Length: 277
Image (cartoon, rainbow, N blue to C red):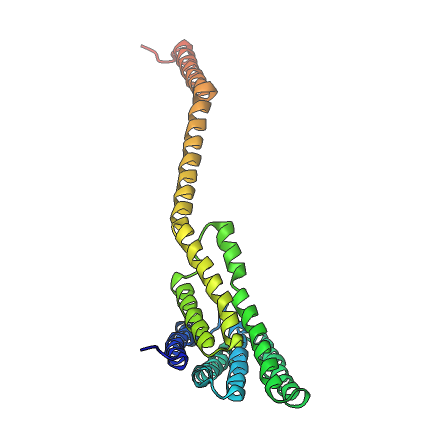
């Protein structure tokens, strides 16, 4: 019995919801640290603002499309959780970081979203409205998926995967596979296309992880070896210096001290004896 495309789309969409749900919850440890220390430290608010903007656009797209219920559920959750993250960030951020976050929020999540609403409602109509909004979502998703390229370049340059956690790369790759399947069986290129790029970049990250996963150990060994070699060179140089001249000067000084002592003893012996018998 053949499985219908709608059933397969539902299965992929459910799995995509579960995995994306875990991805959205991943920053909880970061914000637990922020709340505990009452400081945002070196963390930035931009990733959460972009994630909120993406969820808002995909939620709007799901509402217009009407047959993408599972896209609607996960992005509704995404909007709620990202707003919570941003509120916590603003609460514990410094004054300058708070101002910057509010400016970015107003520019991107308010002004840009309102502009997209106005354009899609008044400039385009019917099925073209869904297509225009879909390609806007595709453009944003591709830029988000392309963001880790800087981390990929850093891994190749440093030969270390310290700043590219395998679990996150694997989860995002798996999420891209699920949403690609959902878009494929739903026959929606706007959902499927960006996740092809996400899957490709995820594979590249995991391949680099397999190549450079021992990079940190190798770097540590090389540093230790360099320290040992430096210590050896210092010892050898010191020994060479002693052999070439320092010992001679020490011996010469010792001989000079002995001569001075013997001369002093002779002077004492030559002094007249004032004692009378």
